[in-house]
Image 1: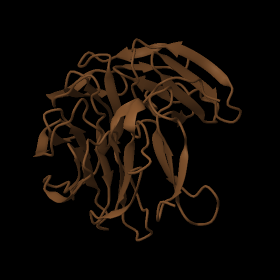
Image 2: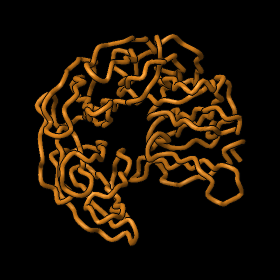
Image 3: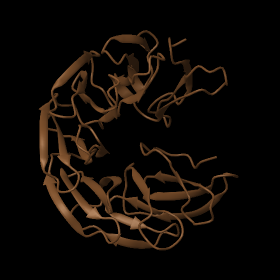
Image 4: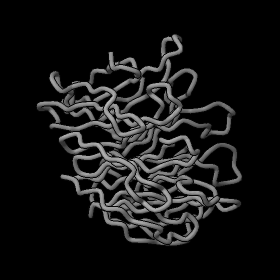
Amino acid sequence: MLSPGLSEAEPLVGDVDGDGMPELVQILGSVVNIYNGSTGTLENSFSIPYSYPIGGALADISPSPGLEIIIGNRAYTSSGSIIWTASCTNEKASTAVAADGLDTLVILRSTGGILCAVRASNGLTVWTRSVGGNQWGSSPVIGNINSTPELEVVVNGTDGYVRASRFTDGAVLWSTYVGTYDYTEPNVSLGDINGDCIDKVIAPGGYNIYALNGSDGSVIWSYNVGGYIYGAPSVGDINGDGLADVIVSKNSGCGGSGGTLYVISSFGTLLWSYGTTLGIPCVHGGGRLILDIDGDNELELILAPYGDGWGDGIIRVFKASNGT
């Protein structure tokens, strides 16, 4: 059992101690807990200089066995020793890691609106860009969103713009206005919604969820949910047509009236929704999973709202195809 507490950071899974078996890394505010993947026993715990939930990443950035843990602007060993501290951004940075050819870069997005790339081996700055941000800045997303072989970095900004930048040097390729938010800019997601084997950008903006062309940021479709969308959209083939569908959550208040879960087809039409009548308090918290949990060859959708008094903390399981 993981330690209880409030966190919007998804657990990380990977071999961080070099024993050949995966561990589970829990980021819980200012504490990092590492659990044995087989038994669930706590193997190690160390403190980090952050006071609010923040995400991280695992990457092989040193010659020593096992993966290293990157949280904020620092890289750690599994024992909590600091390998490097990036100087291009502040401690409250969200993280993504990818390799393009022989160059592995860590992309950091700070709460102050700075997007920068550092070398995974030593944390030295490669490039820096200003993209806008606030206390709950969204994480960068890395992928191939156009017909070129190079990777791109996509982020949402508090000014209402989604920006795509070149992975290698940070040059802005396009920016598209999707709308502002009440207090935070949710992460974007990537998914192939039309079967051309090129990911599109799925971006929340104000009351809408947008599907954007990765090549130029043009709008493919948008869907209005009638309220602010909190949390990153989930992307997966819900209806079995081989194309990625989109799952988003409209929040109507934490500890209050609840919110609504929307499942939207790859064509931008509503497949089903849940919570309009019953409401799900703080529906954007926790997380979502799409998988076949009962072996019937049909996908299920698992929704976990906040606990700790912000939401009801009840895990709900739906048939992904119809919401029953």
